[in-house]
Length: 281
Image 1 (cartoon, rainbow, N blue to C red):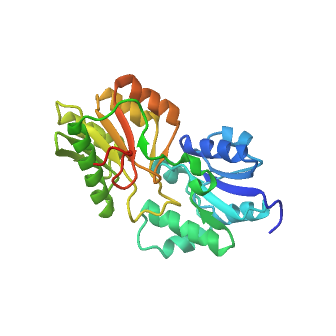
Image 2: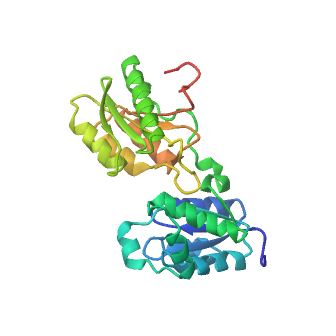
Image 3: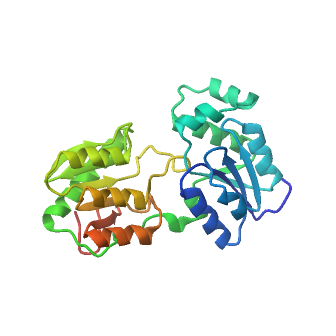
């Protein structure tokens, strides 16, 4: 490879995660080569990076050439790509067409893992973003001021259990419980819609859990929670949110804790079955 070995590569999609990763990587002194998907990546990334390339979804050869030419040894992915943008900006080159023809299905994870394997075949090591910035992972324990009642703790335990079982079936990551009743389980509609469905069925405060699916590959599919989800939970007057400690990214943690504290919601992360030293669900 040519170039500076301090370079790391970032494939950037939408939302705040690519910006957060870029800022954290720069704080550690790394040089950053960012390939941003057209119509998705924030324009601010070009200012945060040492080298920047905008490309359409499906342009594999320019992607590999960019990172190899920058001297990158490791590459990571942050952020998503909307279906609308895939339809608008999908410009497959010959390599992308060849890779796609070999796939059993076109699920997002299948496509992204195939891209990761293709890049690794060319000498790039594809890693999870938390390998670059491990501090993004949520730590175990009570994150805010509110402490659960015994009844709420039981709902938290059940929501976490149901979400884990849902993840084991590779269906979703989120479960909503109230008064020991499972109200909503995540499907194709996503986390926010699941929370709204659950809240609409309960007159008591709901508890939501979001977890890492056992069969997820964290390099391409690491669950993320941020202020927007906390604002939604405040809107529906949720009692608690429990997260999968060390297996989930929390964006703007200080703001998330502030929202939880403001409405008296329990915000916690469980490591296995442990909430904190004295609380075991």
